[in-house]
Picture 1: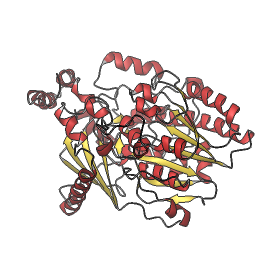
Picture 2 (picture 1 turned 120 degrees about the vertical axis):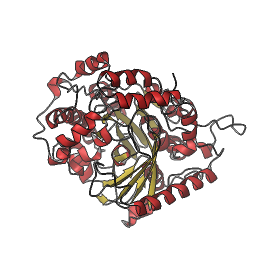
Picture 3 (picture 1 turned 90 degrees about the vertical axis):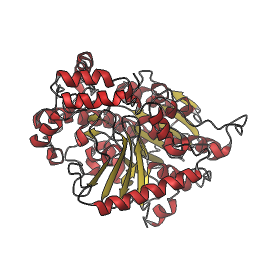
Picture 4 (picture 1 turned 180 degrees about the horizontal axis):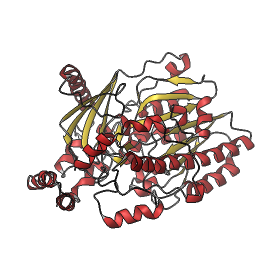
Length: 494
């Protein structure tokens, strides 16, 4: 068996044609979707990039593997301790190690991820590792040649696993001008962002908010972004500016999709396309205006944590699966389909029998997190998303937010005050989940508490004073005072 794992960074499912988007952003991924199972409610347990891949490839949630942030102690896996063996013991094997050692797969990765995040544990289990060397600033033409060369030499061999990591939808948007295509008009799904909502965002604050979509408003950063995409707006001050921003994101998806198509062409040319398992997914999605975050992944919410997951598996009937899964569940499910025993320490659950019988049940609810830009844990249950904020980062987040994601997928109307009954139920789920996680923990350490003790979300620690100055300069003194008060309380590093 051959397995192709296409990992497209920062990919929103609702901006893929096969998930109902009104633009043709993903014709080649759509072809895979027609022949596979499309999971519509798959969530990264921990976002963004580093915690997400740590969970997916270890099989354990961030609260158990220790990785919940992008810097500080909680950006590294928990140390095993005194029982650490001479070599990696089977009970600690992750997804790739199990494929290699238990499944007999020849494992290969094309990705800059390990270097970008100093996540050298990610290399464990890979027989070959190709780093294009640009630290996540790669475009598809930087990544594809490594995959092309390997596939042309090896595609016809059996039992290989190839991980290919594209980065094109990630900011700064940098699809070459000559590669941009006419995607058609802005679809209705994007027109939720009205001038009224934008005006509220402009009066609020936060890195990557409507006033500062490039970060905290530094001019040199703005110039750097615009060197890649000259038409990118410097503020999101109107729907028209927002649509130009959306163009950058959508073109990144289409550019990555073009090279997905080239990979499929090689597999077809080699006569192995039909027999190859294909997985298409992402590490996390991307807020594009939701919660006043533009072009970043700063929250534990329906938008950032919900990821596409498409599985083409020979012998499994194509279709739509709407049930709730963690992404780590689908890692376990793939191993289950391969009859590989999953370590007892894994949090991922094998749902392979559900897929075979097409009797989808999934999970009753999920708890998702983000500790890189804010410290949040959220409950996804039925049509509801409840966000519990423990540290707002440089944002204006209330302690509790509640959204009906069926009626309000872009999280505009906070119903926490109106629906205290739902908040209460979700809080019980969150407490039950935490107790269960701590009971199963090797050391009973909550890594989110580590983040809080070390000064809060990593990406907000060093920018607090500079951003407070920016807020004063732009007439938002009361927001500046809030941040300065947080600094006095010692909530950020200086």
